[in-house]
Image 1 (tube, rainbow, N blue to C red):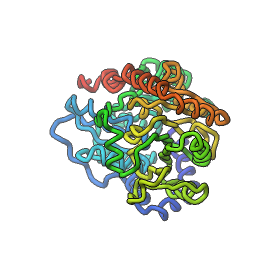
Image 2: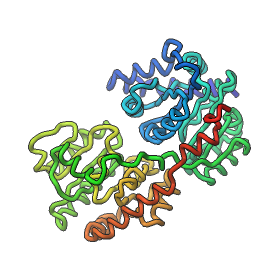
Image 3: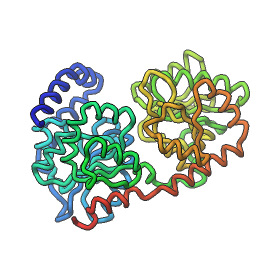
Image 4: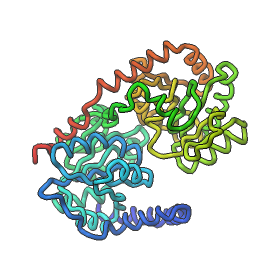
Length: 426
């Protein structure tokens, strides 16, 4: 199986070479991290005394944010934690969040890469967050008697269907995973169907619920207004939207202005490559007076659309929102799946998302049931937003319900650690 996987992975890497080169030309930092992902840190990383070393591996920005409380709890238990991420955005956030920790690009899944990373980092545990199932690193850990785990693990309907097509392969891969801590019983059942040993499976909850409670206090909105120099007023915050959704949101916002002339719109593209494109779309195509977070200007007071073109700030900018829209959930030039609504809910902001939110199916179902969110079809979005913005008391009730929902589901980080047993030295 190792040989077959190595051949398939290598062929995939070769076919993706034009992609790597294009990314490298656009951003030289990408090639630098690619080199590190291939050959490792280059030296054995010194350990801190006799502390147990836990390697937390996150895929991208979302997983890095989800891992925050897990890392905090591990460090409270006296462990040394090193962090890796795959994407540049994830790496940047990890380095900013943990400036005193070792932060590395996650290795490629070649045998050479995984071997060198394990030799250089020498972890006692490897903990992968959410969706990373890499056969090479799991097999390398087993060979070196390094414990490994998938935590806050989930399988989207699409991923589950794809894995089932080659179930014979994944059933063998999952035998190399020591512990799988899933978000929900449904996820545990999916891993069972794929062939995971039931003895390795537990339900520990979703790490995304362990979002840190906002520290800005009740004056968060006022603080952001002072910091940015943006105007006072009611704000519609559209977070984590993807290609095609920006046009829809701007069109709807333009229509809303006829009934709510003081309304402002904050747009936060998920992809950094969309920052300038979205700015131009708003400023030149519609046209609407538009400002950018990264380019403060005294004339920003006159703007009505604001582009959040910085990374890692969306969470706190949800504090501006009278109403939050969460993207990748309406039809567009993307596969759909949705994004995390809890970042808005934890700040007491009502959430609206589209029907393509299947990657967060349980969260949206439960949040909707409690009254903290609404799922709205694209064709009905203008009417629903008009209704909600006309009913401030309803928005307040939705926000309070969402905040309460998040509070009731905290604790996944501590539960996960107890399941793994690392806090007990097992």
